[in-house]
Every structure is written in structure tokens, then in C-alpha cells.
Length: 610
Image 1 (spheres, rainbow, N blue to C red):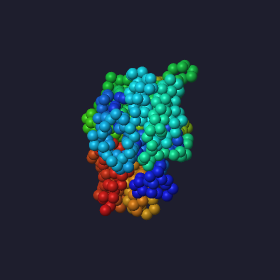
Image 2 (cartoon, rainbow, N blue to C red; image 1 turned 90 degrees about the vertical axis):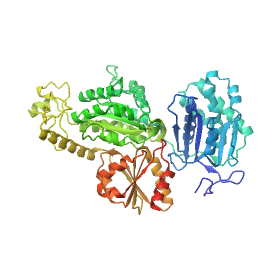
Image 3 (cartoon, rainbow, N blue to C red; image 1 turned 120 degrees about the vertical axis):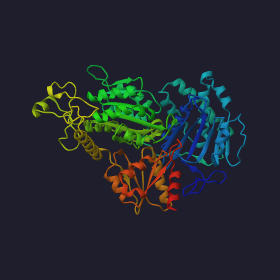
Image 4 (cartoon, rainbow, N blue to C red; image 1 turned 90 degrees about the horizontal axis):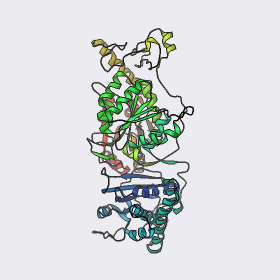
């Protein structure tokens, strides 16, 4: 069914066409650096405040300013928040791309544009709303340096009037954006209201799209994944952050800096209980983590692909010396600098095997804002319990875009510090072997600096060592150590967050995905069911892979592994994990820098099944 089809409950516009209510996509094309983010966030927040599920994605260039940028707004009464493949509403405010953007508009769609622009190849099958941008900006009386920003508020007013966005909600959104500062709120809202009034008087509605209030966002919040991650780390007990700025991870640490004074100040001393250090590069950043993790701190950094590669040697050291630390990798498009402001899931294999020799790391794969927050604690607990680096693999789509979510819950579970021997423990035991596997789980006991017992001292070694932490090149010591680390990796399989499985009656086809692919998978499963194809869905939340995934693979005749990289990296890991079922695992890998759409997944699945 297309958006133009009549459906039960539809109303009709003045021309007899069925209206489409709360089910369309808006693309806003502007010039990077023109301040359009304020206008776009205002649209998102005002629709959200009307109770309508909504999501926004910023597709921006890596250059500082002047190049084209697009912002997509998905409005969905059904709660779908994945990027939509088709565009029903276009705001053509970048004149360099206006003609090309117009060609991508769906038949019957609506185009808002400055009234002094003439399209080179105008279409006859769309509705035009020319907006008097220069006139309204002049009438606003805004200072010259603010005119570009104010101009964007003209399309906010135009969209509000034509689509039915509540002006009162727009004002609420502006109040939040400007933290209640009256002057900028009134200046921007003044332009919005005048633009809306102009459209009301001069541009009668001719398209079929509009919004109407719902009650589907009550109690929810809008938040970016990097903000959720930063808050999660604070609530997870982070005590040292060492980092070097890189897009798209920087706002993780920005969030930590923003909330530290409010949330992590010792009431007795008035001092912060967490240190944030900007290092000279990524190598220094992870080097500080190794020292801090060894000393008992909950230490973390946030970076992206190029930063991960620079951290390789220290990550291997932390793995072999068994030092806990946490690395957030907000994935972007590679190889090399690649497309640094586009999203990707291309660091899966790199992060999992990062290091020299036979190294395998624990990786967490957050699939929503709740998990971006919760994994702030989970990552530290796993790192300390297993005494190893833990990678959290988010991406730009999650990290830098606004997502709806339920409010976060304060973590009530005590922090898991793992196997740490106190002075009293050492007195009672009478002996201590740092790398001895006493419980058979591959995890030894450790002591922390400050323990005064003479037996507490040991060497943390990246070179060969035996159970006593003494240097050793003996083949049997080396093999014993690798065997123990393999047992520890198997222990990790039982501790990492298990996958989430959704089943449908009669399904013998499965799909496996992870991370920000989830919204598109959820919608695609519904689209496929409407076509008569029942499909079960397993969302991975961590590496190493565990028993539930093996069972899911064995129970389905065909399995599609959907991800946003070129080589199908998780597909390859699943084939390694379950070689006897490798032929039944089909890769659907997507790699163009944009987030997945349900239509793409549906078409790929149907092409295989037919």
C-alpha cells in the first residue's frame, strides 16, 4: 500500500484525495553552517510534543561549512523510526541542490522553497509552496549576523501552517532549545508565526499530508545516543576519562564534562570524583587508561575507527596483562578518513580482534537509547569482572541524532569490581598467584595499589609470563596462558547481555542484526509479514556469540544477516561461530553512509526468497 492509497478511517482533502495523517517523511536541504539544526530540532521536538512518534537524522558534510546538508524527519503513527526511502515533503533551502532534491520528491509531494528561486526543471506532479524568505527576515529586524539563522525559521512556520504543527508546541520547543532565554525565543518565534500567517493568507493547502495530535509519546524523552552513553558512564562509576577529540564520538565526553559537577562532586570535599583528561593523541589516551585501570579506576575513552587503529598496541597490552578498561567506538564510515560524518558498522572485526597475535575482545552492541545508557554500567562491570578491555560499538546514527526513549532508570545493582584481594584476604590465604585459574573460569585474582600486604605486589606483563606473573618463555607456560585466556573468553559468553529474540507463528526464516539497524529490521519484519512472509528476528547485543544465537541459527532454514558494512563482517563471524550452518547464513550488507531503510531490507529478502 502506498501513502496515496485510501485506507480505513482516511479523510479527504478538498480535491477528493485521501489525506495522509502522521505517516510521511520530510527532507530539509540547507547549507552546512547556516544554523539549520536549531530549526530542525524545533520541528522534531514540536511534533514529539504533539504525541506523534518522530525521528530525525542529520546527513551533513565533514567540511566545516558551505556544503549541502540534509535533515530527514520521519513521522509515523505506527511508531516506526527508521529512515524512510521515499520523501513526501521537501524543504529546498539549498539552492545548489534544489533542482536535484526536487527530482527525488515522491509524486504528489509538497515542496517549500524561497520565492525568489526558479527551478530549472520544475515538475508538474508536486505541490509548490514559495516562501518570502527575504521579506520575512527583513521584517524580523534581526541583526545581520543572525539573518541566516532566522531565515531557517521561515520554513518552520511554513511547515507548521501547511502540515498542522501546533504553534504553541513550536514555542515550547524553542524555549527548551534556548534554555528559556526570552530574547532569542521571541525573535525566532516571531519569524515562525509571521511565516505561518503569510502562508495562511496566501498559500492555500493543496497537498495531502498533515499531522494530528496523538498520545504515543507521553512520558518519553528525546535524547542523542552519545548523551545517553555519557550519562551511563557517569552512573556506571567512571573515575577517569582520557580522550582525543574525533567525530562522531566527541559529544560522549562533552556530556560527561557537562554533568560531572552536578552528579559527581564529593559532598564532603567539594571535589570531583572523576577526572577528564584530553590527551595529545589516541595512543596517549589509551595509555592513561591502562595505568588507571591497573590502579583500580573505572577508566574509559570515546573514539572512532581511526582512533581505534592507533590504540591497537595498548589494547593488546591491556588484553594480555589483563587490565580492565572501556572503549566507546562511535563508528563512522571508513576505510581511512573515509566519510567521517556518515554512519557505518564497519569496525566489528577490527574491534573484536584488535591486537597482535590471538586476541579476542568483549564487545557490546547497544541497540537503542536504553542500552546506550545501561551499557555505561555494564561495560565497566564486565571489564572489571573479566579483567579485560571492553569495547562498546555504537555508531554515528545513534550517537548524533535524536531518538525517542523511555526515561532511564537509576542503576540499583551494586558495581561489580570482580576478583580483588584485600590485605585481610592475603593474610588469610597466605599465598597469591596473579594469573592462577583457581575457579576454572580463566579469571585470576588481582590486588590494587595501596594494599599494604607484602604479597600484593606483582608485575603486569605484556610479555610471556607464568601463573606467578614471572617472566617466562617456556612453551608450556605460553600455551597454558593462552588456554586460560580462551577459558576466560568462554566465561564472557555466559556474562555478556544475551540477544533479544522476537518470533512469529510459523516462521522458518530468521534475520540477525545489531545496533542501529534495529529500527529498520523491526519495520521490515512487519512489511514482510504483510506480504505473507513470517520472519523471526534475533538482535545481537554482544560478542562473543553465545548459545542462544547458535540455537536460533539451528532452528531456521534461511537466515539473513543484516548490517551496515561492505564485507558483511558479522556474517563472517557467525559463519566462524557456526561453521556447520554457514551455507544457510545469507549476508545483506549495506554500505553507502546512510542508515538502513525497511524497504531496502524487504526487497533484498524477497529477492532471495523468490
